[in-house]
Image 1 (tube, one colour):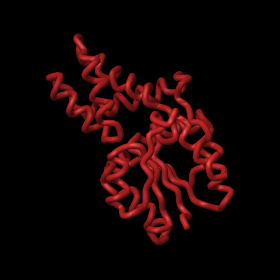
Image 2 (cartoon, rainbow, N blue to C red):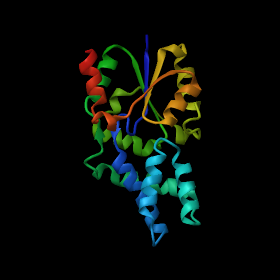
Image 3 (cartoon, rainbow, N blue to C red):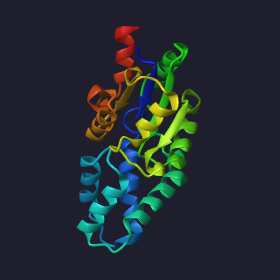
Image 4 (cartoon, rainbow, N blue to C red):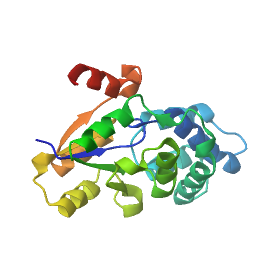
Length: 208
């Protein structure tokens, strides 16, 4: 029986793809007068779930920029902190709150592990009313071990000291698949956008 549910955030719990992609593009605007926006959007789409540092490194090489990719990661985080509350389409997917309430009512633990930095993550969860459901919110970027490095999952397992069979991870990308597999725990990889943004609603309707 699973006693600890671990979730990715973006595109798993939150409908955030459009916002994230736009802010990824916007990060480059002060650094390039002629921006290849189509390339940046395609890069962001193809690399969903991967480290932002790696995405910025690839873009900097392609665009021939001299800016430090680590600086772009910082600027991107500041854009999120400044602007994310202004995007009305940044919200939880349908029935996320109902699912989290059900899990908590059964006495289970819920943790979020994400490559997003904690500052913007906390703002997002506060804005959409999810923060109170989580026992832990862990930024793998802030820990210095971005997914698919299993460090953050292993840290959770060490903290709660339960058998690995008790944990299950929910994510939306190949990176999330590798993340959970590298840690040796069960996982479910979903695509909310292929399920009409109603994956959790359909699960609740089917089984409860």
